[in-house]
Length: 64
Image (cartoon, rainbow, N blue to C red; front, top):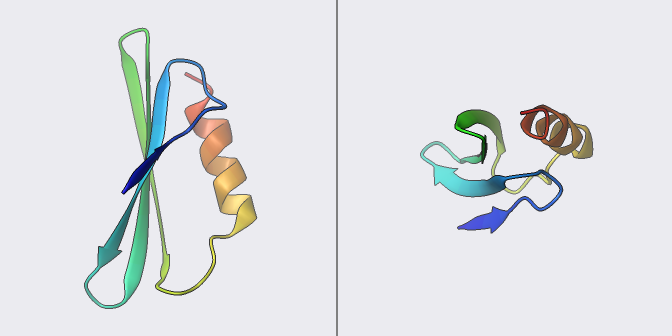
């Protein structure tokens, strides 16, 4: 599924995928003024997301 990533200007969201081998992938994206960025973060399935990783993703996405 995917969720809007509200703190960023423009359009942004995070999609979460279950990968083979028991891993989770979060693919974050942002689009604004004709520019886009995508960031990916993987972790073992069942492990909670690292808050520092989420903050780093947000900081990078919202820079556009």
